[in-house]
Image 1 (tube, rainbow, N blue to C red):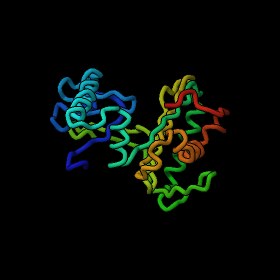
Image 2 (image 1 turned 45 degrees about the vertical axis):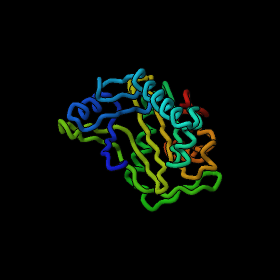
Image 3 (image 1 turned 135 degrees about the vertical axis):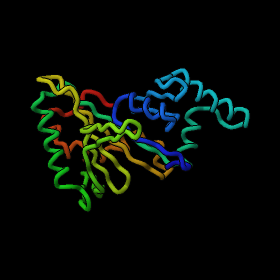
Length: 222
């Protein structure tokens, strides 16, 4: 809860937002590809998102506060902390490679991570909290959506998510999501790829994508 406002974590697909908004269970929504919307049209609305930002800038200008977006973000981070995020896409994997990667992660699911300590090459320790294969029970129509990605969570709030799509004979894409929370304001100005280096290293090590695919780098970094 944030200020006692309920929130929902849903699978990929705008339809899940639509159900919640139709039932008046949420009014704002967003996705990791930066699509943003609200219940005024129940769709992505870039113009609405832009107007929201302009409203913030106008309000701050009237109050005599800095109106640069960077200044606003840094002020927000200093008060609430910053989430660092990145996504690594490995495109055009073979079906066999995709299956091998996910099977390796399923072994991790079976073994569990609770109480285990994982160490990155720089010595940073990550203490396992839990892992699962994300599923979603729609509170509106009670439909079940399963196999939406393997999640690995750590006690410091770090999260890894692995999703495989397009599992035909060729063209499968593995997406590796890495995010974590940082409260220390002295670290908020760091680039995501710099701050998350040990996190990324561990995330790729757990799924063994380099050895299985023979690749030294992802196709796309977000």
